[in-house]
Image 1 (cartoon, rainbow, N blue to C red):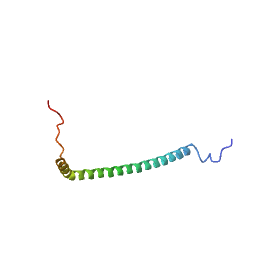
Image 2 (tube, rainbow, N blue to C red):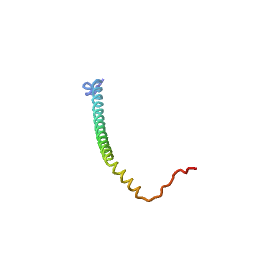
Image 3 (spheres, rainbow, N blue to C red):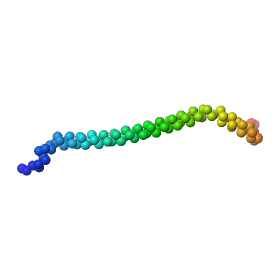
Length: 88
């Protein structure tokens, strides 16, 4: 019976080792790409939260000023006061 020349060097255990090395490499690439994506998502989330926090901080400082301006405009407007609900 004639054997292939590589058959003696490459037996079944070597095939499993090659398959495992290939799978480990594939999983390493997949997990690395996923880790980079998670990093970018967390970085964008941090930027968004910092912007939101800054908006809240500025909003707290400017609320009395805005309220005063709205009251001035309401007082200046000479719209007649209307009753929303009529009492019988």
